[in-house]
Length: 122
Image (cartoon, rainbow, N blue to C red; front, side):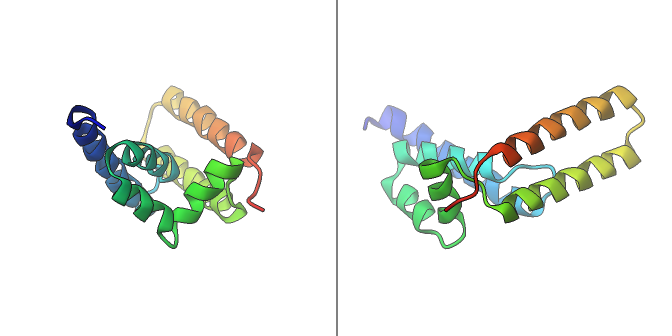
């Protein structure tokens, strides 16, 4: 692959990996979408990083389940629901804009519905 594509892809892979790792600890910042983006860019920028992601004891199973089955674990669904409800609760406590709160409730509800519509890994 040409360097013109490889280096930006590698930088984006690491950027999204950092965001995914931050998302593990920070409610409201998604982990899995950033992890999926990191894997996609790593496939174009670094086979070493791509192999590492898929071989990782915790992150690799998320990627493999999603790639092969479009699946999200029940634990992941519950954790996402808990974090979304908690995030919305903090925003309810901190924000005074009812339209923003309503919009976020609809968005978070759509995310929850999407996640719960995904199968669980076999």
